[in-house]
Length: 367
Length: 248
Image (cartoon, rainbow over all chains, first blue to last red; front, side, top):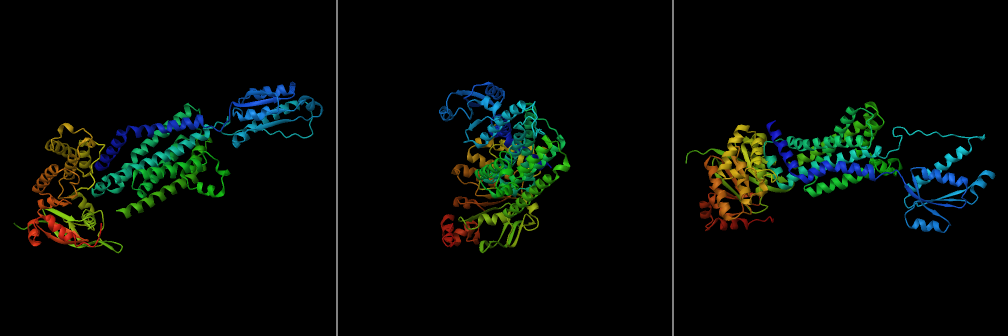
């Protein structure tokens, strides 16, 4: 036990003396969360649009007011002729233009049919889709009101309820995503670097010659990063609660439990990385490129997995973060219990065991 | 001299990596309190042989007994009775001098009281009392090496293994370093040292010279010079090393 504590104390000395790394370790999650929560959001708000009203009547005025008063759009320009449309797009300020046909109200009232054209900048296809969807929704709403007092032969009223995240806040998906990414990155990268550093400096050799058992070396290497990861989880959850107003609907106990499992999985991955590399740079590159990119791309946090080609969908199953993010969403946002996530827990367990077995095998060969 | 206590005894100790025989049937004995020089050109198999002796590499065949323990069965007991200082400087640069000493004391299972008293004694001996709380990376290389040696024998091992301990330091510091080695040997610690410096070989009680994985010569520097009819150990070494077929 004495050996163990002496060694852990040394690990804390290493970490606490390295102020820059400390700052990164504890500051990174906060910065990431703020960036992903505030700046990178898939919602579109206050988008600049242009309007060409060839009719200028009551109906078009009514529609324009509705569009303007929605939080999605700001009317940046009022155009007066068709040839101004493209110019307006080329300045890059506007993302969408709405063109009303001449005699809009007359056509609508007497022929029961009027036309409006939506032109969007599809260089960002996702945004273009979202914006046209918003405009159509506003137009539909108006149409529904016009028809209110009339008896239409067939009407389907689709009533929409957004479950779990009624305000469609982007942070609901970025908080679990940032947790999945940060924990994996810090735990795996920092453990692998700190083990490899001993190899690089030659101190590992001295430790192996000492009566310290290899598992004591590994466990004491891992414990400080485990504690730092827990601190990070607490910071992330506090920020998400206070700044973004995301409640933890499910059990905090269960959330902590799966988080601890996930951290252990990430630490095991870090140990595995350390057994296949012999320089700190290599460990860092493997962790960054081998972990960060797949986690961002394939964990379902930035891009929906269901939209990926089948091969990538298959590969995404290999990423621990994917399963953790699913669990966090289920517990935190949907409030599901243990029985709904046992499969994911089992997968994380399986991965951890696999990483540890492979590391153990590689560690023995080196000795 | 009276009957000497044997602390290292090997018999046909061999290490193979596939077809390559890194160490071939080496047999030798080292006595208590002796300074034993283990020489050989790069690639002659010194490091591999030493790794088997300190229990981090399993021999392919042959036997070896270190401080009374078998290298196959009792590596844990061997690790407790030896000290080791590696070629690469092996203290933690971002810990203070005192923290390094305390750490290694703790790793070798010494109790707090022993660590405290011995640590103070050591700092006094090295004249580092006022620098105890300085980070190791602020020390000059020579001091680091003296400190590394002191921590390697801090737990009073029976044998201390030194792997090229004086690489890169000036002759004066090297001389001071050897004074520390003499003192350790005088206190009954057996010193097993590899080196490239032939002048250091002259300081040893006995030396062995390895060529291509075999021990080609083993005796006191005096006798070796006589045997090979050479003026210095340098000449002896060159005569033997030239026979090597294995390159670096």
